[in-house]
Amino acid sequence: MRLGPIARASLSRADTVYSSSISIVEIRIKSMLGKLTLPDDLVARLRQDGIGELSFSHRDADGLAHFPELARHDPFDRMLIAQAHASGLTLLTADQALLDVARAPTQDARL
Image (cartoon, rainbow, N blue to C red; front, side, top):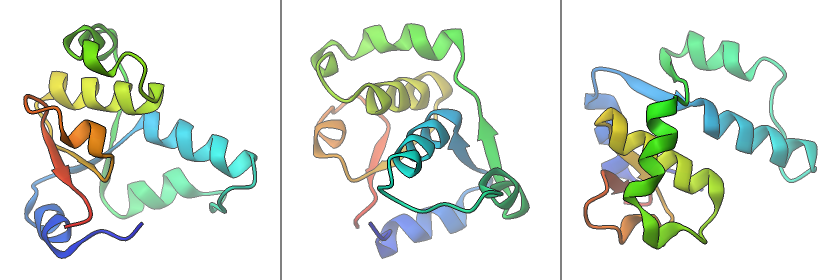
């Protein structure tokens, strides 16, 4: 998926852009399954591009309780939305189920 112009503009205006450790786990698993190709030095490239590291904490894990309607949704997505909520950050996503949670800090990445 490519980011839409509004999402790209949001990223360019942000003081800091973060990549969650949860996202790295998810895309590495997809890479291991042959669903996508990633560079071996992915984390170094993110760092080089100024992308901050956002580690998943106990507070983030506990935040899953704020989203009971997502209990059967993809576990990576649930962790990402809980992390964004706990950290006061906006999650760029194309996942409609996450975008439909009105109290969640999300932005449609396709726009």
